Every structure is written in C-alpha cells, then in structure tokens.
Amino acid sequence: MAPGLDKLQHIVVLMMENRSFDHMLGSLKTVNPNIDGYVDGDPYSNPDANNKPVKPQPSAKFQGQLQPDPDHHFPAVDLQIFGKDSAPGASNRQPNMQGFVASYFNQQRNLAHSQMIMYYFPKENLPVLTTLALEFAVFNRWFASIPGPTICNRAFAHYGTSFGRVDLNPIYPPGTIKSVYSRLINADPKRTAKVYYYDTTSSTMEVANLLQNEPELFGTFKQFLEDCDNGDLPDYSFIEPNYSDHQGDSGALIANDQHPDHNVRAGEIFIAEVYQAIKNNPQLWESTALLITYDEHGGIFDHVPPPNCVADKFKATGNDTGVGVDFHFDRLGVRVPTILVSPWIPAGKVENRVFDHASIPATITKFFLGDYSADRSPREINADIFIEPQGGAVDPARNLLSLDAMRTDCPDFDV
Amino acid sequence: MALIPVPKPPKNAYDPDRPVGSLLKSQVDHMREAESKLPLRYRSQIETYVKAVRTEGEAARYIQAVTRAIHLAHEAAERDRRGPRPAPVAKPAVRIGAASDESVERKQKRARKRPTSKSKKGTGARRRRK
Image 1: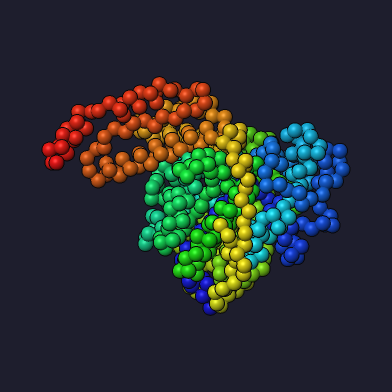
Image 2: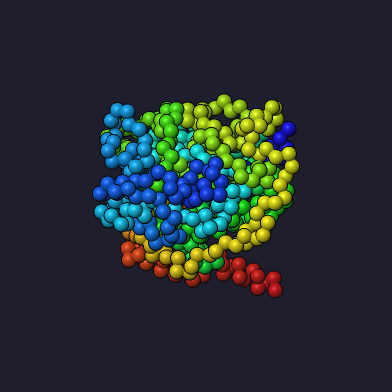
C-alpha cells in the first residue's frame, strides 16, 4: 500500500544554480547526524598555496564574497576533485576533494581570498532550504552529472545526456535521444509538460526546445503561479530561476538563481514561492512531488568524492575537456543540495542512494510513460529513480512517499 | 508549525550593471544561435552587436528581444497553419551600450507615428457608424 504514490499526479523540478551540498546544507549535520555534512571538528580540510590546512568555516555571506565567480569548468573541477598532486591521465587517480582552495587561488593568487571557497552557511541563515531539508527528504548522494559547468549539467536533466559536451555550448547534434518533454507530449496517450522560465527577459537555458516547442512547452513563472492556483499544472514541470538583475514589468528584479555572486536570499524567497504555490492549493499539494536541486557545485567545496558511474555512449576528447585526456562521462560531478518535498514523506528522511541529474528524465519517463522503448543514453538507463512507479508491488525501502496518511504539520513560509 | 519568516535581500543587491558572467554570456550566445534560425523578418538588429554585451542588464535586453521574436515567430506559424498569411512584423530593435544603432529605433518610431492609408479608412468607417 502506497497512498502517496497512488495520489501522485504531478512532478515539479526546480533547478537552482551553482552551490555545493556542504556549502548550503552541510551545517544540518549538527541537527541530524544522518545528514552527511560538516561539523566543527571533522577532519576534512584543503591545503592552501602554502600547504597549510584550511578548514570549512560557517562564514558564507549572501553576496559579495565569491568574486570572481569560482571556476567550474572541466579542468578546474578536475583539480578540485583530485587535488594539485594528481595529474589528469595519471594511473590510479583517487578523488580526494583537496583542490578547491588551490583552484580558487589560481584565479587571483590571493591567499586569504582563496580560503573563502571553504565557507558554508550556518543553518539559521537559510531558513527555507534547511527547513525543507529537515522536514522532507534530503539526498546525501545527489551529484552533478558532469564535473563541469551549467549547460552540460542541465542537459542531463532534460535529455539524460549532454551528447558529449563538457562545456557551455548548448548546440547538440540532431539524434535519436529526445528530451523528456518531447517524450511526454508525443506519447500516446499524450502527457503534458512545461518548462517555466522566470520571464521573457531571463528566458531559458533550453533554447533548443524553445525553438521547437514554444509555446506548447514553455510558460513563465507568473503562469506557473496561475496554473497552481487554477489546478492546471501539467504532469511534469521544470522551473528555471531568474538568471539576471533586470527591469521587469513590475520594476527591478533581482536574480534569484543563487549563482555566485547573486544574492542567496533572493533564491530563498523564490524556493519558498514555488513551495507555497503548490502547498496553497490543497488538491495540488496532495498530488504533487517537488524536487529542488542545483545544476552543479559552482567551484565551492564539498567533502564527498564523486563516484564512478557507467560510461555514456558519447566521449569528450582531450581537447574538449581542456586537460588533454578524453572523458567518457564515467564519473559524476561534485555533490549538490537536493530535496524531495511531498506531504507523504516523513520529516527527517535522509536518502543515501546515489543519484545525478540523469535520474530526472529517468524518473519522469518511468513514472509517466512506464516502459519506454525509444533511444535513451546509457547514463539515463542506469540512473536510479527517486519516485517509484505507480501500481504493482512497491519496495518500501525505495519509496520516499511512504506515509499511510498525509501530513498536516508541514511548514509554511511568509512570502 | 509557525509561519517561517524569509528575510529579503537589501535593495542595493540589485545591480544590472554587474559584469556579465560566463553563464549569461553563454545564454547570449545560445540566443544568438536561436536568432539565426528564425525567419529573417523576426531577427533583431542586434546580431552585429552581441560582442558589445558587457553587463547583466544588456544581456537581459538582448535575451528578451530574441525570446519575444521566438514568440512572434511561433504565433505567426500558428496563424499560417490556421489560415491567411500574417502581415509582416517589425524587427525588434535592441540597444546595447554605445554600439547600438539608434537610427533603427528612430525609423521605427517614425513609422509608428505615420498614419497609413488602412488606418485612415478604419477611422472613417468608425465615424460613419457613429
């Protein structure tokens, strides 16, 4: 019996920008020791340019600290994961998460400033994200899909692959792997899906779909709020934050994607708005699961080494990666904060299975389309799913929406 | 559970003159690629000036122009599918820093002010009905 799964009709994914797990949620280990974060006294540190250890500190600021934007292109992330003593291509390389300070030092040659990459937020400073993590399910092992930047990681959330890209180039070769949205709207019976971008001025990072499927597949955040109010939410929704400070219809809009050096509090408000829009409609609240995640770590420290994974069918050459060594997409990126919200999830749930953004199309496809026989990437086929399919026997150890009755004690935010 | 307060960012957090970062720069490149795939009549005059985008505000204006052009192109394609061809649509003009072509905006302003023979006829028809 899994009434939460039986009731589930809508899945919403909100993908924020460029923050690591330890940076945002690591402090929660003091509240719940099952959360694999960082507490004062833990042995983890990074060597600085003088080989002196730098410990994580609860000194992260909302804005003005991470300038310049910490490097998170493939060569920099390789250094961050493997440390400065391990050359790309060397045999028996082991990820040790020892290169964050060294990588940030490379950008300015400023010893004091390079230590700021080890700063994290005290839990009190992020009331929205930390409350949701403690009240619902938090993932201890959700990694970015690639040790690289935004666009290729977001591609994994849309397609289950980046088609061999490890950079910010969004132009993919025509192929047989369809986006999760195309799969849904072309299914028989047809399902519904939408990418909600913040407004036309912020627009989307998914222009390939925008060109082919506007307006069927796209809406603004204002429309998302209206669709929640009216009970018109599609089966699957993917929400993009506002990527820039700009003038909107209602005045000055502050970027709320939390990408350094955008204000983190603006992102907190945005996450709360998405949550409340769903929660304020009782029919929607009982039938919706909201996944909040980040595209990648943005160059900021995390202490958990990303694991190996099955190789993709695409390859990035040594020239593409910038480190002179081919990459077969057989290692995940750095860990990112990820939370699953539903009134059917018990408070304090901590999930330890390994996930990455390929788990998003894998889960959506399995849940809404069942056994999907068209072409998918090896990465997606092998990615774990975070919501079990409806019908049939449900493994209680895998089902996160496990309560027999819906909770009535879920938090509300004043936004 | 008590209502949880969510502090707001300070007003000085807003800075459209912040230098454009690599993500927004790539989104601009992304949009330029998208723009190049639109039918000619929907392309903005910005193509030459993409390299002049230096700030978030400038990037946002360009991204908005292309997104709107994509909207217009899709709407026109939908009208095409339904019936007669649409009237030509004015090219969106976007001004980026000193490199923008102000003459395009001036021309479009003049064109908007200038009454056309069709609008005169329309006005007459309304008067007759009165």
